[in-house]
Length: 78
Length: 145
Image 1 (cartoon, each protein chain N blue to C red):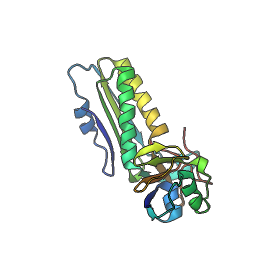
Image 2 (cartoon, each protein chain N blue to C red):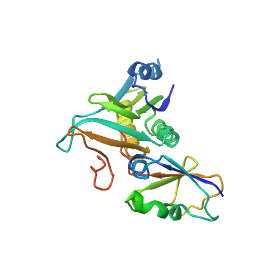
Image 3 (tube, chains in turn purple, cyan):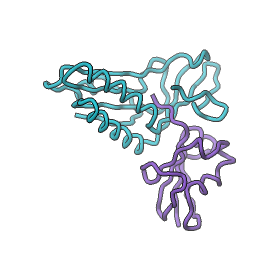
Image 4 (cartoon, chains in turn purple, brown):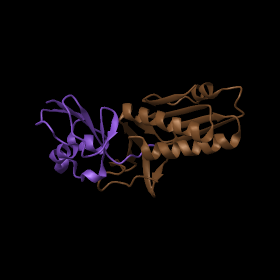
């Protein structure tokens, strides 16, 4: 299946990209995808929030073919 | 009318005032967040903002719906910039109009507080000494309250 992953803020800097396409095995949870990048991101999953297809999603959400998942670092707007 | 928008271009206060105009409203409250020259005592030369634009605009709209119900305001404007901003530039505008002043003032404060806590927007401090760091980044400056 195909998954699009979005990175923002420091996560985009550390990943050296804002977007990545993955072809993972089915029935993968968000936190399992996150684990693949945790060493590069240098921060645990509990520092992040997640969204799928432009809506908030819990870390244990199962990803489906065509989903876009975003790793959202600590928010600091304003 | 309402405006809920993330944009790269400078914030236009006149556009917000036009949106808030309503003969039934006796109060308009406007908050502008501007780029400050320091953070926790360290000199800063500007800020850079990143955002999950589609989700942030959706969250603005959700906050706007809450504010309208809770405070009885009639029009709401929430605009936030992305990209590099110089000292003194406005990074965010929140404006509301309501029949009376207390509703407008209280709604405006609630809206900016909720925006800061809930909108997926990210701030990078451009220190005056040439270094830079994202707020909330491991080893970086904390997320401001």
